[in-house]
Length: 167
Image 1 (tube, rainbow, N blue to C red):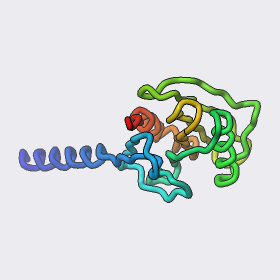
Image 2: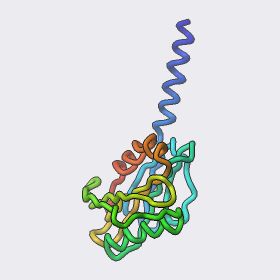
Image 3: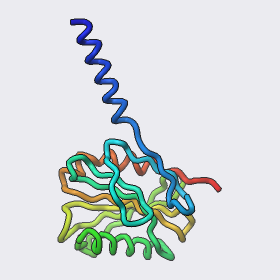
Image 4: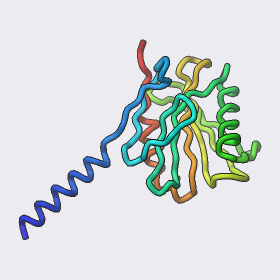
């Protein structure tokens, strides 16, 4: 009996350790400006750009971290909205867009929330200025309401992991 308990504890510890591991990336790849960590329990996903991403095993939650072109924050946000429309088929209600300014490990960031009128049930993104007002990284999430709710800790963990690369 005691041996079975010890074996169970060891397997539980190994399982927790496996879920706790993560992959760290420097982005963008050609001229790294940030370092970001994506938890291992999100499976790597193919991205169309110089990006990294992960998807839940149930395929109900996806997160992407990618460069977003734009001369300023508004232009970068428009590129992100365009990506959600063109690549994901999301129709966004423009009157529902809300912006919240904040700092992520010393970097200026803006959270964008909005209502989707067509497409995946839930989506949002945070733009992070890697150079004041000029270069941006977007951390985009989308999925079903249940998938986003179940994996929202991954989203916040990824955002909290972002660190500027000092040059």
